[in-house]
Length: 371
Image (cartoon, rainbow, N blue to C red; front, side, top):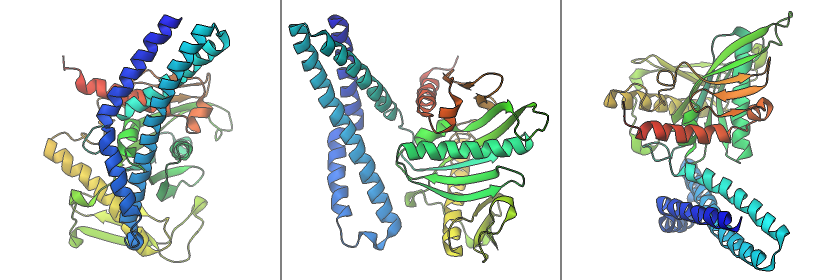
């Protein structure tokens, strides 16, 4: 047992050293110091968007550094504790160190996944759009379940989110929704969630209690930054304003503050109705439109239409994950074979294992030579 413990400890120590090298911890500390200086500037909040970018990046880096430093301390402590317990024949403490080492392994595995996010836009915040697909009212209900799942996932991790637009279906659920996850690496992390999700259950909307299969699509885009230079001439945009509405078509706003923005050359349409003013909604809609055009531009440059969108619809097949609630309970990813027998927890935001498996799978696809 002691020999096994020593081998695992050495492996984890080596893995953590590799993670520290990839993350470049010294550079991270320097960036934290620079950002702390910027955050302390008295005029920081004169530019709200820039201030939010600084504070978000600072919070993320501080959290990552803290995790790495805590792991290094825990590895040192558990090794010393195990050695002392072995010398004294303290079986209870030996068992405790075994459990602690397994706990450390889980955290290191999770942190290692972060080092795999090195794509061009992986470090960006994410724009997530969910749409109901085949399945009628059940599909609309499923789309709303997926929206809640991702927002709960973000909440579990204390990641800030902002809902830009929700288009409610007539009977139940949503036709579509767009929201942002405002934390560094949200795009790289969530991009593996893109594709068609499938739900099998006894329909709560069928008075005969029949089993229903429904589908919803998830799209993930990187948030556009100033350096992207996605300029859209005014004459290429048509802006329509309308009154915001809630579930069942009920008005939630007495003024025409909601904005629908159409990019005339491509036909791309986005809307935003969740801000209080037309100006705010217009700015949010423009950010979403720029993100969509960024994807189009990159796809044209690379001649790979799904380069940034994860190629979710073609190489992964039409369906990427199934959520089965009847006749048995199972969530299964069709690419990675990752599965869970607890759909309730998954739909409540417990998707980390699926995301980590997806990121590892994607890296394996990128590094495996074509046959």
